[in-house]
Each structure stands twice: as structure tokens, then as C-alpha cells.
Length: 140
Image 1 (spheres, one colour):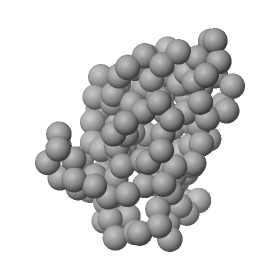
Image 2: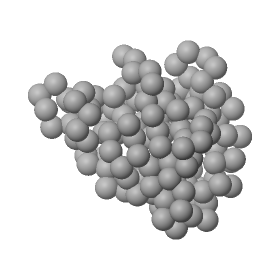
Image 3: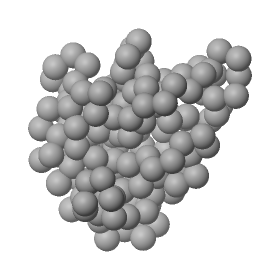
Image 4: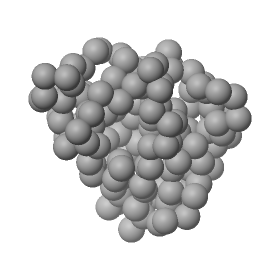
């Protein structure tokens, strides 16, 4: 069983950068949309927490991950389950906040507000997790 942990480290106005760990070992950087779960309670229910479609990071919390065929990407991708208020949250390649739509983009954060080497990083991640049947991610 592998455990993924995403530690958000840079919460910006239009994007979020985090560090992804696999079994407590740093693996890569992650780009997400803006965090709006201001009190970190796992939902967007408070008055100052408004979900904006395609521009909001998923709430803090723990989520089960399954491997599933993506109709959009036409390949098997990791999908986070039971994300309150969100559907179809995936881990996939991409470089900018415009590519996220609530999903997690993996790569190297060596350009402000972006990740690079995303496809290569994603391919390495898939080799590690694709056969896992009890996979979770905790977002902190």
C-alpha cells in the first residue's frame, strides 16, 4: 500500500504549489488551482469559501484513489473519489493553472506559477502507483 501526501506550500491568488510525497519521501511538485478551503476543514461551506468552477483547488482532507479510464485524456489516470463538491478530479500532466480545472498537475516547479517536465514526472508516478489497489492521498 502506497500513501501519497500533498503538502501545500505556496498558496497564491491564482494557483497553488505543493510537494508530493510517496510514503513520506519527496517525489515531485504539484500545481493546483487557488485554495479556497480557508479554514482547512475539508469543505467549502463557510461564507468566505466560494467554489469557482475550474479555478478552485479541492478541499483539504484524505481521499481514496482509483485508476480509471479518462474519456478526455483517453488513458488510465488516477482519480480521487468522494471529493465534496467536485467531480472527476484526476492526477495528470499539465503546466499551468489553466490546465488544472481542479485537478493535480505533477512536475517540477522551476518556473513561478508553473510545473515543467510534467509528462515525464507523471509517467514515473504511474510506474510507482498504477498497480496499487489501496491508494490514498492526504492533502495538508
